[in-house]
Structure formats: C-alpha cells, structure tokens
Image 1: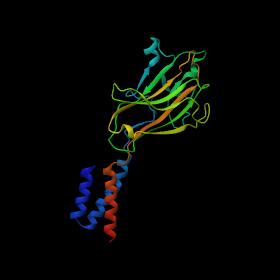
Image 2: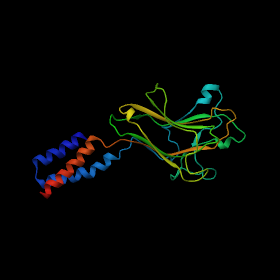
Image 3: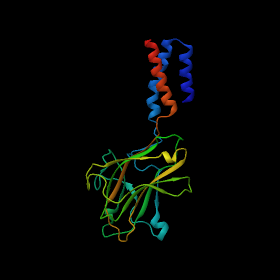
Image 4: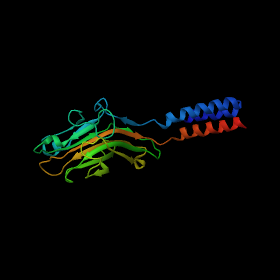
Length: 231
C-alpha cells in the first residue's frame, strides 16, 4: 500500500493536474477494497470448513466423548435462527433428550493480526440457555501454546427466543492482540451432570482490520487531486 501511495503522490508532483486527478480517482476506487479486506469471513453456507476444527474437552478430561458436537443447522429440525441466511454452525444439546455430558468448542483457523488498532471479531448468534446451567464463551489464544482468554461469556438467552430467526449481532474489539497470531473458539459447555439444555448457533464470523495507513493515504491523495483540478 505504501508503494501505491508513493506512485500516486509522485504522479501528482510531476504530471499535469488532469493526470493527477485521474490517479486520485483511481486511488478512491481502490481504497474501498483495501478497507474491506477481512482477515476471516465465514458464513458456513458450505458447511464447517476443513480449516476449522472441533475440540472435545470432556473426552480429554474424562476419557469419554461428549454426547454432542458442533455441526450444522438443519431446516428439518433446527433452522438457522441467527438472522443469517443459509446454514449456521450449531451445537444442539436439546438432542440429548434424557441427558448427557458435553464440553465442546468450535475453533477458527489461525489468523495473523496486523499491528494496527481497530481490529474486531464479529458474528451473529442465537443462544438459548436452560436455567442458567450452561455457558457459551468466546475465547482467544495467542500462539499454539497460549492460554485461552475469554472475550465474552454468556449464561442467559441471546437472540429473540427459542426457534425464532432473530439473532444477536456481536462485535468484540481486538486491539490488545494486534500484531499477534491468534485463534478463536466458540466454547459450549455445562459444568453440571445430566446435561439437557437447548442450543447455540453461530453465523457470519468475521475478523476485520481497521483502515490501514495506505488506504487512508490513497483516499487523502484522491481528495487532494480533485481539489487541485478544480483550482
């Protein structure tokens, strides 16, 4: 982006105002693409990608697998109630019937965050809690051997209501992790026994960078070029 800014700047210094204005217009056209370059964007319409993974902490702790796992919504049973379109990732503890045990997490791929402010993780969700017994946590870790840190923990309903397609939009700031290699997890668990709760659905998971210095410079150069042309 620095080279692009330098090219536009030099063009304004050494060419005609008309040429400068053309370069400025090009900068303005290029800037939105730079502003929208998401570091992660997953809508799950093709299912859970192979680059994502599921971890079973009940299996690790007790040597017996969780009774449920993360999968996909199904219009025949549970549709996408997040407010998104197509499919959504879902952990369905309602399917346990008379009860079971679970402690599971859906993990994103590793993401290299740029060293700049304004980063965020966003998603839409529908989480239905049962009597404050289960939890839905969004966690982050830095490096493969890093300790998970909770960014958000829910222990109550989020979303319109049970089986209603009105979810909740969430945005979590990531400035504290700028310049790091990070991974996120959606951790669904019930610390009690004989678990039988409702569900957690997640869709449209996006990690977004702030406008970089290069993009802002391109926009400023374009505006300057237009002003010079008018003069």
